[in-house]
Length: 425
Image 1 (cartoon, rainbow, N blue to C red):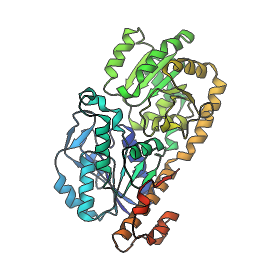
Image 2: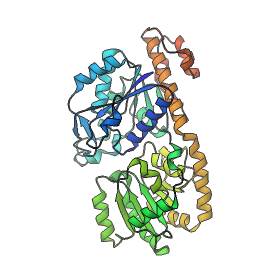
Image 3: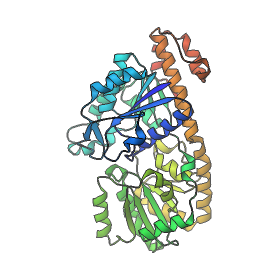
Image 4: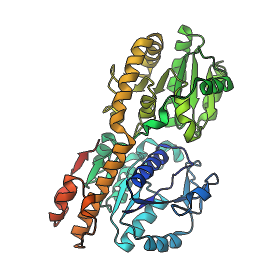
């Protein structure tokens, strides 16, 4: 298949969306498909390595999220280019510039189109005039308006699918968790780890609590910092390592300094993707107090690194983080310090939970993710061509799923739109 991915966020940007797309692209290429990425310019992109597979539109930083970008020109050129690539399907990953362009191109050329809804914007209204302009019901109406023109939608978790249904969207919805490339989190040499420890001022004997991801208000990193003094009271040499960057990093650094903890709470900043696996191995426990996740990629990465996870209970992680088995959960921020102390003081129990987590996350491998995405594309293309009364030209050997083989008899998709969802592991 010829597959077009339209996204405002892509490598070298670091985010859950960029990671998801990178893994998807790699897995689809392994399966013999041609994957073309349509995205925004980035001053740090390696254009030479992207030749012929990544096409970038001139862009500027997004006003509300300066670390993200939106396209401002080059639309007509892209429209002509897509006409030459003979795309079989378009997959959008943004509700902004490239997402709108993907929809326009799909309509112009009669290409089936699917959208992954990555971000629950009701959790981010504080970035826009501190939530005084856009209200949750307005965002839900906007979401419904954007999503209704797609052949199908992909939700990374049941939490997102339920949100889309709550927005009043009655479409074919697939729940497809993003896969994890397990090989990226294999153990590295102790020499390498010691080098990084030395650069950060961490002793090999220091218990390390790791937080990794976007350093933003909605991640509730404040709660982790507030819990840390209780940990220090039990383990004075403990370190809190907050890896990543974002709009509140400066505030949190100031808060740590005001608490007199600047030597115990460390902020190394954003880390290149190819080094992320190494930083997970610095930790003795991974922690998150966020309830705004839509994919839980960092949790899975920590589990793939055989690192015990302490997380705030949330629907987005309930399928793979089972309290006391594959992780430790807490409901109130007041419970966090006790959970962290328990993990650090009970290494045998922590090891067992970490091993259980590693076994659990193998269900969410990158290979399974690529297989499921491929089957989903085939189903959508088959349905679209049947409904449009176009000849089916996909190779029979590619029709791998039961749904795809049955879909040729469909004459209308009206009976599969409302409430149609499938668990895809």
